[in-house]
Length: 361
Image (cartoon, rainbow, N blue to C red; front, side):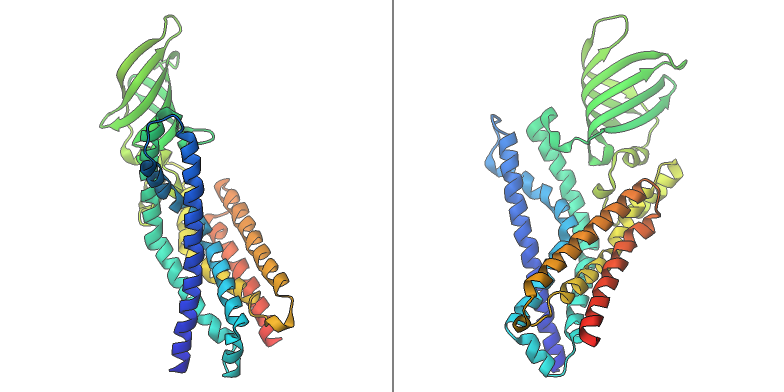
């Protein structure tokens, strides 16, 4: 009964510290993003509440990437506070080893990871799509925040010929595109015209282009309000071309992977995202191991500051490793399964060995 009560107490302290770090980062990021949107909205007739709402919807997807660091810093804060108040000393005097009062935090980290993948990820993906729509309504064509570095490219072939479509921004997983440039070719592959449009909406059998300007080789540019560009592409094929893996929720990823394979598109990005979400509970547990390995030292022994800095450095190196494996996977130089689980194994083993050395010699 004492162990169960103490375990619940340690778990509550860990969850409170981790959620405190998470909420603190959330408020900070919303405030910074709000100031940035205010700067970009200078001169526009936009209410402060609308800008704050847009910032609120934009931040969760960024916070999703920072969840491991929230758990790392929360775990370090929790165990340093317990050590400073001598509660860990009392727990050791009662016959509990470090492995016993770390296990509640490990189970809590696993539960937080499951919640992050199954609930928070779909919510952040939906909020990100909503933020894109709101930002497009606020800034229109000046919405640089939605623009990809190289844009989105797609090739389509119809009885009228070939069309190469470039979109600067994508919304609703490819169903609505902004900043459109279309290069049209005749069936004999000779160049026909270039089309620029403010927006393109996918309708059954065609793209509806809005605010269109058409350029040809032998005549002056022509402006049109709308233009229908025929297409044989299905919504599934379009979303596979324009939807980024981060904008797809955890529950939709398996169907995206299957449809991408059947359509002949690359699936490495979707597979990597899916395995990263599957591995997230274990990644958070690995962060708890790293946090415990640098936070259980008694204050009277000194050297706590160096241990804390080493923990932060270990988390930073683990982040670099995850980015390297992610880039290798996207370049198809590493299998997505290995790219997603390698940082988990390295972080977990590093924390386990450090704790094993400290506690058992």
